Length: 136
Image (cartoon, rainbow, N blue to C red; front, side):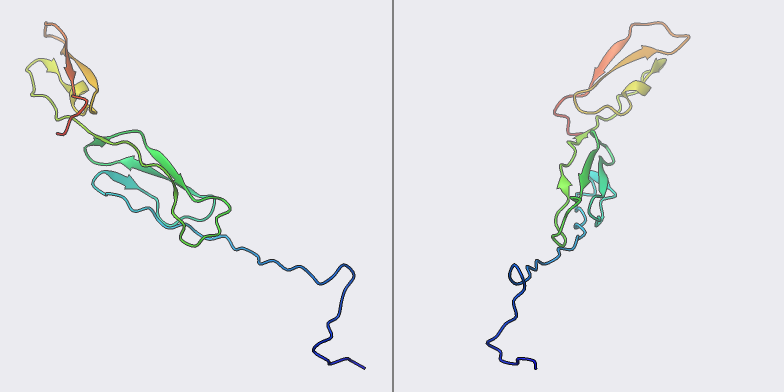
């Protein structure tokens, strides 16, 4: 006969079972950035996935990576990473007849370019410098 007394609980060797919740992996939220300064493919990511953030338009800088932790269990957790340091490119210098201006066409802030004469022209090379605090 089965004992239906609610005060009586069956016991197993070693005591009752130990049950812990199973954590489910969750995707991370997409990255929201200033679209004028950055371009990215960082939408919502699955755990363990990564994406790239680059400087956009007239901005220069080294791209960076963001990632969703491989064992992420927090729904819509923020992606982990740092935005690239993007600086404004200098405007192209005024064209000089007979000079190869291409090296100075898009310089990052703080960068330098040597401007030389094109073949068939004689003259001294000059260095064009984009100011370190450029805000063109």
